[in-house]
Length: 87
Image (tube, rainbow, N blue to C red):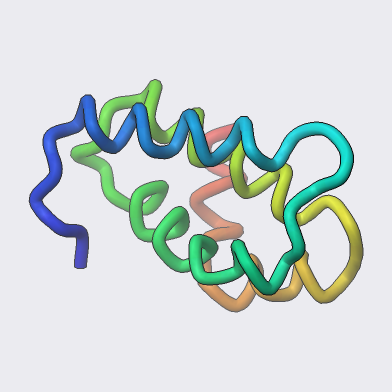
């Protein structure tokens, strides 16, 4: 379930979020892990604009950088198939 946000708001929100994952030091995973399911929901939604999905993919990429545990959390969302299709 996605809240009824205007697509522009989603884009701004996730662009900012994806940017926060870049650089050093990265935010602690505990402080950002709740975003993984939300990012997966947005990426799975075929009605969301491509640019927003792109930003969400980048955010997931930044979140998975750092170890198997982070990657496993993304795999558990069931998003891997959709990510492969987007490649």
